[in-house]
Image (cartoon, rainbow, N blue to C red; front, top):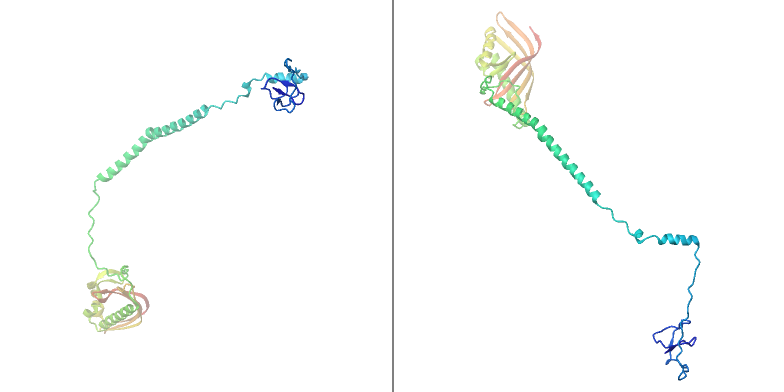
Length: 298
C-alpha cells in the first residue's frame, strides 16, 4: 500500500508512483515512520480520482478561419517536387550528334560525287600530258656534240678556284720569270731572229684584234716587219707584272719605244703595251698582245 506524504491519501494500487491529488511522489506504508492507523473491520478507503475539467480557450474568429484553412492543407502539399526528367537533355544531345553525323556524311558525299569527277579529270589530263611528253618523237633533237679538248690561249681565263692561292714569295718568282721572258722577247726582235722570236709565243694567241689565232699566223705578220727593216731598236720602261692568285697567268704592262730603219723606210713611236703570259709546259709564254695607248708615232 502507498500513501501521499503531503495529503495523507492512501492508495491500494502499488503500481501508482504519484499522488492523484497533488502529484507528490507516493511513499510505501512500510517505509513511513508513522504508518497510518488502520481499524480492523473498517472497509478500505478508495479514493476516487478527481475529475479534472478541461481547460477551454477562446480562439478569435479570424484565427479559427486561418486554422481551418491550414487544416485543409494535405500532406501532399508538402511532398518534395519530383526531379526533372533527363529526357530533354538526352533528346538535345542526340539531336546534336545526329547533326554532326549528317554534316560529315554531307561533306563526304560532296567530295565523293561532286569533286571526284573533277579530280579524276585533272589526273587524267596530267597523265595525258605526261604520256604525250614521253611519246613525242624526238625529231628536232640532234646528238649532243662531244666536247673536244682545246687550248684556251686567253690570258684572262680565271684560275682554277680549287687551287690554293700562291704565296708572296711565289708571286715574286713569277714576276722575275715573266720579266726575263719579256727581255728575251725584246732581244730576239732586235737581233732579227724571227725563229727565236716566235718561240716566245704560246701555240694560240689573242693578237691585237684577232682572238685565238695560231702561232703560224702571228709568224706571218711579224715576218713582214722583219723583212721590211734592217734594224729594230726597242726600249722598255715602267714595267709592271701582276700574277694571278693561282700562279697560272700574269699580266705585264709597260711603255715601249721603237725605232725601225732601212734604206728607204723609217718608223718610230711610243705606246703603252700589254702582254699576257701563261704557263705552258713550265714555261711562261705570250698568250695575248695589244696596245693600250699610243703616245706618239713618226
